[in-house]
Length: 147
Image (cartoon, rainbow, N blue to C red; front, side, top):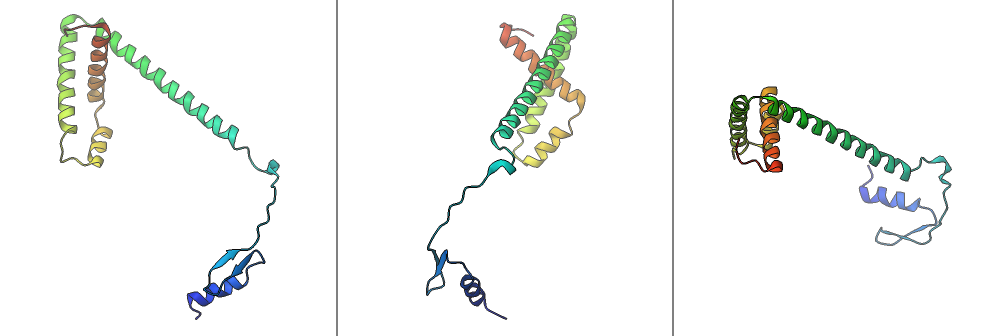
């Protein structure tokens, strides 16, 4: 069985005129041939990338529009409630929010456990968290100090 250096020397000895093998087994470039390639057979690169960027922008805009629609729906349902109902719902939402923050702030949780908690979150908990966020944003936007 040939040693690695013997195999390397065999490979290097078969090199074309473009390289020259030195005594220590290394090679150096002696000449370079430049050739223009016809790009007619290749797929366009720039328009494809721009198109992907446009698709991503459209997707992000669609997500933002859906989020805004959901926020408006949650806010309108909160505003349609009587004040007593709204206060009760928002106090529950605030407690859910505090409990969520406390759970996620646990220094003993790994990143994977945090992701697992987020993925396994009940729909009603998600709704309460969204309700709390939407109401807080509404209060800040409108300068409301109560409720």
